[in-house]
Amino acid sequence: MANIPEIAQLGATVLRLRAQVITDIQCAETQRIIETMLDTLATTQGVGIAAPQISISNADYHHCLPPYPALSVRSTDGTGGDD
Image: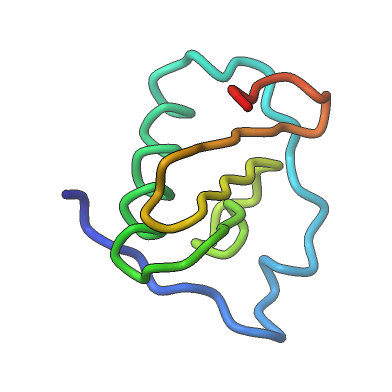
């Protein structure tokens, strides 16, 4: 499991920034971010996480319902998702 980043709290600058559009969901950097987000989500036992919550200003969001059977990945251009 990857190093779990601290989750940004209310008032953090990154949460107020306009998120960057993800143009290539298959690129290595985006895949690394997705892996970090999923590890963070599983470790914190959350039901959803957005990239800005781990201080990455990308328009990337994941959600799962315990015990994490499904995953949805969305970017601002509407691509992605397997639900």
